[in-house]
Length: 135
View 1 (cartoon, helix red, strand yellow):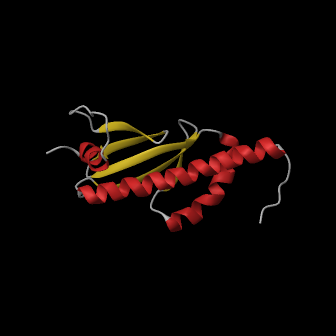
View 2 (cartoon, rainbow, N blue to C red):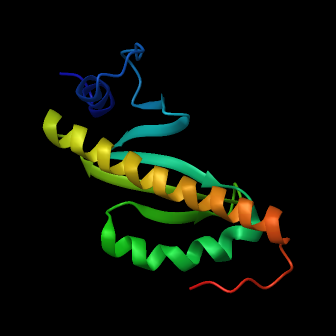
């Protein structure tokens, strides 16, 4: 039986071949690099959101509300100095459940990626040291 990373790749129709002996693989999808890793009885998906420290506070403002809407969790990693999004599922999940996991996770990644882009646009338009009123 193949491991969870291989079953995920098969479930999503990933076009590249994944070596048979890996339990960790970086999937390149829609301009993102998503790490898929089997850890014990869990399949963990991970996406690096940003490594720009001066926007961490702004990103944290969104985190609590997003945790109510989705299963993906925004976390920080002091060793790399970045924010990443992660989500896990049972590594023995069905192909349908793995596909659903991937779809919901990539939707979360897109949402966070859009927030990073909007913060950069805001700062380039107004400058990072100016106050901006938001509704």
